[in-house]
Structures are given as C-alpha cells and as structure tokens.
Image (cartoon, rainbow, N blue to C red; front, side, top):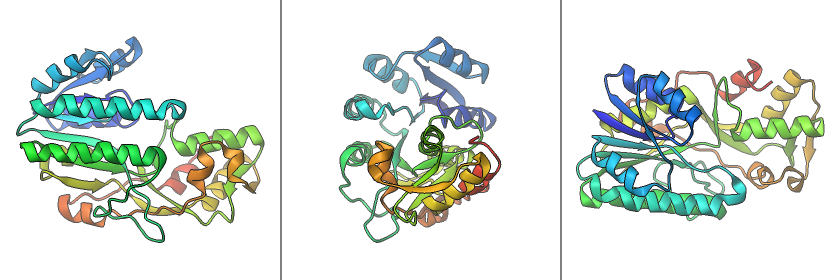
Length: 290
C-alpha cells in the first residue's frame, strides 16, 4: 500500500513511518521544513514538501496514494482555533478523492463527567476539545461516501524517550521554572496515557484493518493520577510535589483539574491491539523527562 502521512516527522510520525516501511508499505511523508524533509528521507520514505495550507498539493498526494494517515496538527495553544479551521479544511479537501481508501485521522479522547470515556462516547466537549471532536466527526462522515474512515483518539499523554513537547513534558518544564513538581487540588484527577510506539502500532492496524466508521482509543494507562506523576517526576528531579491553583499553570491548569480517564477495551477487541510498552510512570522513572 502507498500511504500518504501528514506529520511524518512529528512525535508519532517518526515512529509510525518506519513501522509502515517495515510492514512493506511505501510512504510519502509531508514535510514543511528542510529539517523535517531530511528526517523523513532518512527513514527511506518519499518526501512531499509543503504544509497543511497547501490543499491542492495534499489532495493530489492523497489521490495518488492507497491510503492516508493524518497526524499533523498545530499545537500552539495561542492559535488553536486557527489549527482547528486548517484541520477542517484539509478533511473537506481530501474526502472527495479517497473513495474506497482508508483515511485514518488523529483526535483526542473525550471527557466524560464522572466516568471513563469509551469509544462509544461522543460528548460535545468544550474549548479546543469540542473543535477537534467536530473535525473527527467530519472524518467519520466521509464513510458515507465510501471512504474507509476511522479516527484514532489519543490520550493526554503520548509518552516515550525523546518527548519534548507533549503535555507532560510541558508540565515538567513549567515545574522546573517554579522549582516544584506541580499538581492541582488533591492531584487525584486522572489522565489516560499511551507509549508512542503503542500508539503508532494502532495507527498501522487501523490503516490495514479498521472497518469504516471506527472510533479507536490509543490508551495504555486508563488513568494515571496527576499527583503520582508529580511524585515520580519530583523524585527524579529533586523537586517537591506541590499543590497549586490551576491558574498558576496557564493552559495546562484547567486540563490538570479535570478527571478524564479513558478505556481502550473495544479497540483491543476489534483489532487485537495490545499496548506492550512501558506506562507513563515507568517512563518518568526511567528519566526520559529529565
């Protein structure tokens, strides 16, 4: 299968592209910079120079591929609404040329008040979460036109060695600045998590096997208490675990204040996917975050 991958040099893409190649697929990876293009080329994949605004080039690449994995997304939280609009425009552009082909897109696990989110849950959400979920619904809607569309929902932490920009890495960086290992309230709020290699493997399985309209959860740890994150990271970094007001942690504060566990039981049953790599606390203890 010839696979077009957006975000090919990104955190998940850099693990997924080699896995796709190892599985016998050909890969065309989107790269917006010389450094990204070099990184993609080193894997043995072909390179398409451009960005998510180059809709005609993206449409042509999707038309010439046997399937698409869409990973790229702008994670600058000061411009998140713009990123969501760009994402929506890409889905609208690619859908018409993907008849009969797999179209796998990344999204996020939902927040279910008082419960554990499953693949069947589709709440409206709030803020950026609501926008991303609406784009995910647009991806799934392409199945009505014959596209084998599916969405892989990623948890709040996709962790592993080399993670520099994920939410946990940002939390620890912020804690270093403040001289503490921060959590909000009593820290009992839980975040789901997955190792980047397990997430990448699920994207490949979805590309190869997922039925049209599938909603999949790339969740290894259903819920890791934020205080546990602070305690493990604090021991590693020599920082005291400390409760702070959510307002002291910028955009991370409101996310840390919400209990948001998620399950992947239905995904595991559907595709036989099993997370096998270390959990978040193990990666923190291994020193991957400082």
